[in-house]
Amino acid sequence: MKPRQIIVLLIAASAWLMSGVALAQTYPTKPVRMIVPFPPGGATDLLARVVAQKLSESLGHQVVVDNRPGAGGTIGSRLMLDAPPDGYTILTSSVSTHAIGPHLYAKPPYDPMKDFAAITELSSTPTVLMVSGTLPVATLKEFIALAKARSGQFNYGSSGVGTQFHLSGELLKLQTGINMTHIPFKGTALVYPDLFSGQVSMLFDTLSVAIPFIKAGRVKALGVTGTQRTPTLPDVPTIAEAGVPGFSAGLWLGIWGPAKLPRDIAERLSSDVAKLLKLPDVKERLASQGMEPIGNTPAQFAEFVRKENETWSKVVKAAGVKAE
Image 1 (cartoon, rainbow, N blue to C red):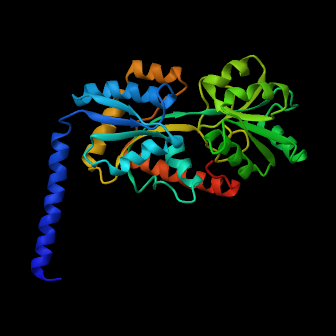
Image 2: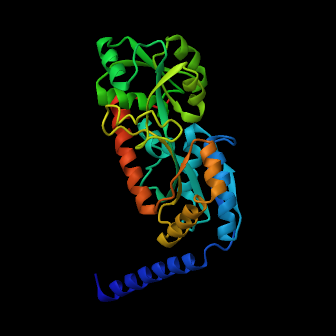
Image 3: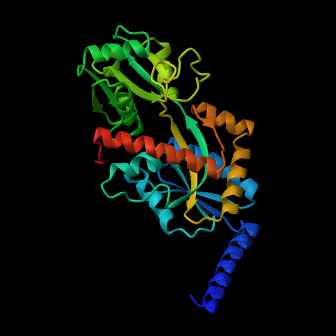
């Protein structure tokens, strides 16, 4: 390469970097669009609206929620691929869109790491592993031993093929060597009657839904999926504590920008979101939904999601699960 060509390239690179710095220094100057790839009323939408309201105040410009549901969150997520990397279009997504969904397709609709810029993890929601109250077990170790003794005779329900609750069961099978059959339902609410009667042996579900049945003695809670016990069920150990080291399968939500989003903008948004997640009214709202606020840095969130993709891609492959 000739010296003149090198100089031209250096000038162009410098101009690109300076434009990014200038953009970050003036950001924002207009409303921000927050895409939610799920219908209104769900957990992701509810949290997105809380964040959008508070973030509008800190940014000085309105953050507008734009619901774009379909294909398990894929349609809305794909909109980010064509969005300018200027911070005016961001995405609120979940473990299903950025750690599980892409691995269910022979030709993934996007790369969850390369096609997006991590901003922050919003929340983590531990789920709980329950078994039918008809089973003669009191601990997870006892259930695993019984399932091995009756190999192939137990089953577990979920809210559908490829969902996080389905794959949590597959992860448990993979890490313990038990043999159970998956039975998909159209929502976990439909699983409970069969779980009560013993026709379904096991179910993963959110704490907010499961707790009434646990307290009523209709089901037995054997472990929570988070990395630490939850104050809601302080006597229930984590699954890792209960005998499956390294098991972690909680639900999480996060915010992303388009690929090549300037680092300064990502850090500004991450910092503002972290602050609003500490507000008492926001913490109270999240707690009512069983969510734990996170608010980490872009680098921390990216590393967390990288590990999540490693885990769930292995589970999907081992179970042979494909998108329906």
